[in-house]
Image (cartoon, rainbow, N blue to C red):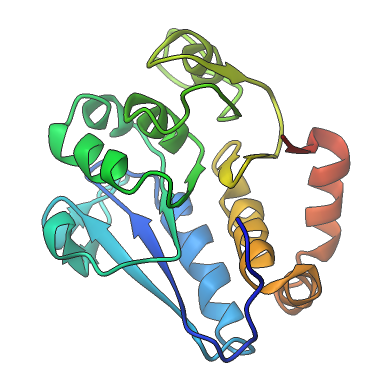
Length: 217
């Protein structure tokens, strides 16, 4: 993820959603960006889905996607959210085509969003991470699936993995860490650290980094 921008320079983050996204993936991502806008007047975001309009999240909560894939505006970074709906999205031609056509645009994922990125080919030959544990009726931990499905790549347990600008973050609460990391790449570490302090997440961010690791390849 390359050039560091000034606080007033325009930057747009595309958050990719679909039916069955985990609410904390959307809330963590959008919540961090919302607070960051207090000190980054040039920062904007857009919710992108296959079709604009209502998206039913995993809990039944409904959010509104701002735009469809075909009308989505250019973004500096796209973040693919995770949730049980990933199982449908890894074989959804509209989703995979949208992601594939933006290569090598900066890409990021939260939790099982990495499995969708992998299915699109965006993680080919890359190191990545995702949620480490199986939940509920899941037979396999998502990180094991990341190691065995959808093209060649390497899976590793970590809070965040950055492989030449493709950023993957671990389980759902790490939506916060992943979004902070992306903002650091766009605006610099000092700005990122100021945001972590504003949202009173500085200790948790440091603890997750120390315990789980931030890996740059």
